[in-house]
Figure (tube, rainbow, N blue to C red):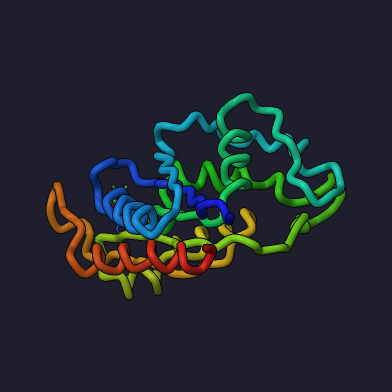
Length: 204
Ligand SMILES: Cc1cc2nc3c(=O)[nH]c(=O)nc-3n(C[C@H](O)[C@H](O)[C@H](O)COP(=O)(O)O)c2cc1C
C-alpha cells in the first residue's frame, strides 16, 4: 500500500493569524481531508541562523546538498522537506520581495549548489524535480500589481526548484492589508482549499 502523501509548508509571514498563515492552514486542512499527512512550519519560530558566506557547503562536488557548519534547525528542516512529496512555500510581499525571514531561509539553500572558490557562478547539484510546490503570496497592492512589480513569486519559485519541486499552483492574495486584523477573503479561501486538494492529487 502506498504511503500517505506528505506535505510540508513553510510560512514566512510574521503573523500566525495573518492572511498568509490562514491561507496555508486552508491548503493543509484541505490536503489533510484528501488523505495527506501535513506539517506546518512557521519560519519566525524556527531556529535558522543567517548564512555567513563561509561557502564550505558549496565546495565538495556531488549531487547531494553540502552540509552547513552552523548548528541550528536547518538540517532537520531540510531532511523533513527531503522526505516530503510536496511543499507549500508562503511569504507576504514586504518592500517588493519576500520577508526577511523567508529570505534568510532561502539564502541557506546555497548548499544545493556546487560553487568552489575560483568559480564565478554556482551550478545546481541536482536538477531533478520530483516534488510539487504551491506558492502563496500576499500584498497590500492588488495581486496583479504585486506580481508585476515585485519578486516574491520569483524568489519562492527559485526556492522550490532548489528543493526539487516544480510549482503546481500559485495563490496571490492582493489587497491583504486593508484592515489591522484582516481575514482571508472567501475567494482566496476557496482557491486555497482547491490547491490543497490538487496538490494531493498531483503527488498521490
Ligand atoms: C515592512 C512591510 C513592507 C511591506 N511592503 C509591501 C510592498 O512592497 N508591497 C505591498 O503590496 N505590500 C507591502 N506590505 C504589506 C504586506 O504585504 C501585507 O501586510 C501582508 O501581505 C499581509 O500578510 P500577513 O497577513 O500574512 O501578515 C508591507 C508590509 C510591511 C509590514
